Amino acid sequence: MGAITKLVLSAAVALTLSCAVVHAEGEFPTNGLTRVDVTSAVCNGWFRQASWNCKPLTIQAYVAAPEVQNKKAVVIVSHGSEGMSVLQRWYIDHLAKQGYYGIAINHWQPRGIGQAQFGYAAASLGQGGNTMNMALDVMAVAKWVRDDTRFKGYKIGHLGESMGAAVGRELNREGFIANLAASALGYVGQPLDAYAAMYMGCMERSNRDRFLNKPMLLVNGTLDDETTLEQCQKWLPWFKSRGGVAELIAMPNEYHHFDSWYAMQYFGQPQNPRECANLVDPDKGTITDDKTGNSYPATTEGFAEHRKACMKYGVTAGSRNQKPGNGFDLWTSFFDKHLPPSLPSASAATSTRSTEPSDMTHEQRTGEILRELAGGKK
Image (tube, rainbow, N blue to C red; front, side, top):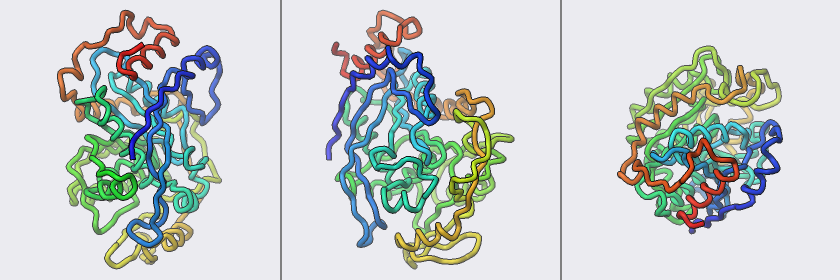
């Protein structure tokens, strides 16, 4: 299945209407960005079982071009279970300022999902709202990047937050995503070069897991009561024993979503999977709960039964100042280290801009982005 690229020129028009508008919580501002439509898939059921089925799905990704002449690499961004928000815009804007192409994927809207945390099992099994499907989206966007000569020679990284952070774990599974992409997308997926995971849940393990020799960064808050630091401290040695390469950084006195746009508070309604750590044994066909020792069938029904038994409610989450930047230096340094420009052309001053980005109006900046993504043609 091929990728379909579309440059949405309406973004330039929207600038004049939206610059003075205060964006609502949860909204992803698209002004100044380029939209790309890519063919992915929505898969339901249990992989390699009779229930497994996949259908083509068109997803949207939004590109922020580097704001400096010396371009570095491409970083694909995945949102968490709450869906697209201003946080992903903060991420790709920061990446652009640091010399990266930042590409944010809208995983949920094409699948008809609002906020998955109010019903994880239902969203996962019925609509494809899970890290496996999100990983397919990343593979599809990565293929679009690799197939486009404008990005030739650029390394590709992934940045995810919360549920989107666990996408990095899926992408790092040796052979799994390659096989899954071939089954769902019609081509063999290629691994990315580096993965940064902000407050990832370290709960999923499988006896068959082997991991790629690709660098991974985990950042978790010491007070996080959803994706706990303690779980990741236990999970990391297991990950490394199976070929993974990773480092874990603790953010002192921080809760879940410590880099988000909303104020830190307690939310009572969202589901909380912190007690759902488990081990899947495909050979025995079981899902075994770490805490209780209870086993469930490794099927869609067994998955739903386990989630019903282990799921809690309520989470403390949010930012202390609701401003971009908390922890950004950690993943920026990580990508600077592991995504160096691989070709002279990727770091040389090749831009034909007559005006420095910092001196441009929003309209001029948008025009430059559209021309750059269209191969320099006006």
